[in-house]
Image 1 (cartoon, rainbow, N blue to C red):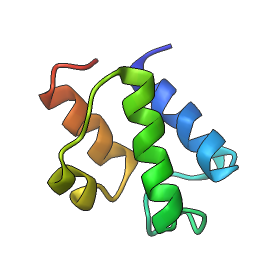
Image 2: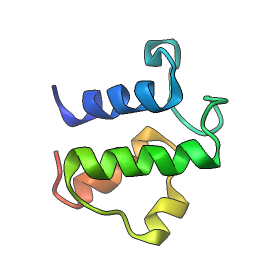
Image 3: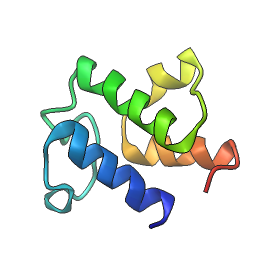
Image 4: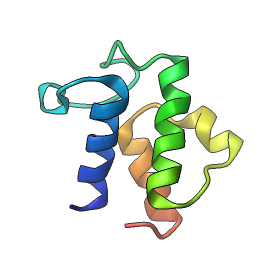
Length: 77
């Protein structure tokens, strides 16, 4: 499973959703993506991929695409 698929799997678990039902998994699209679940998502991603986001990165994340882009910049594929 590639990192994007892993991210979708984590999001499905955290938000309790079927990710295939969403064209874009983002704060604006997924009503379950509230502040508490945002932190849980970040925590689960950090645990799964064994790295840490900076505080500024956590604040700027608004979608799974944002997380994927940040991971690529950190050399995590």
